[in-house]
Amino acid sequence: MLSIRVIDTVKGRSSLTGKADYDGRASVNIRGFSTLRQPKNSMTVRLKDENEDKVKTGLLGLPKESDWGSLCAYSDKTLIRDVLAYELSNKMGRYAPRTRLVELYLDRSGGRLGQRDYMGVYVLVEKIKRGKSRVNITELVGSDRHRAQHQRRLHFQTRSLGAMGAELPHRTGRLLLLRRSAAHRADAGPDELADPLHEELRASALQFGLSRFQPGATPPIWTSTRSSTSIG
Image (cartoon, rainbow, N blue to C red; front, side, top):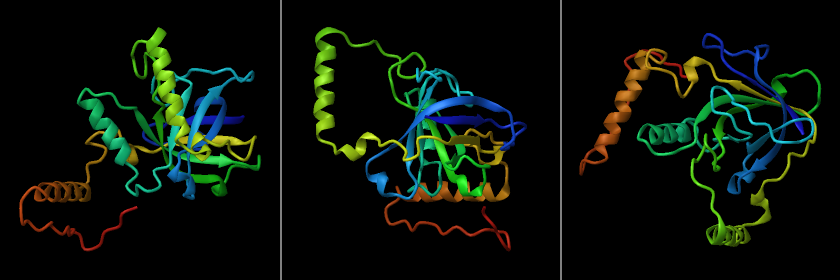
């Protein structure tokens, strides 16, 4: 069990000393299969009370639940591939988990939180499960439920134990999720991202996408009109 603290933005900015959106306890497991070999791992977070009973609460404006995922997005250097795909699906009326970009700190020593505890940018995501605020479907009963459980057992038997989600090696510690500032948020509005460089990148990406559907077309090479450009 770890203590967990989630901090939202205030006026577009978040701070380590900011007011907690949630402050409690949680069990944390490493999740994934092929990603277990990466230096940055995804996690499953289950919010719990002092008796280790599940606690349903909303995080960063998302509906209340106890089970959450924290995706490392290590192979996605843009950090928004999953976020964008899920958002587009939701806007088209198709179900997809809702997300928030966060910066994650994991304190293993119990001392003062510092840069050594910084794990990087993660994607806080709703875990896919049946529920009114998640996948709102009717619970299976009778023979339908038995058949589904049998299929799930067969699926698990084909996977190695490494994919089941090992517990973090440290049983105690602190987990801090700090919501990304407005300039980096996946749900930032057009006004928050209004920038000449951003518009150039957007136009170039659109042109590149269209060129892929034109036989014999040469993908465009993007060049900035600025003399020097720094992308942080």
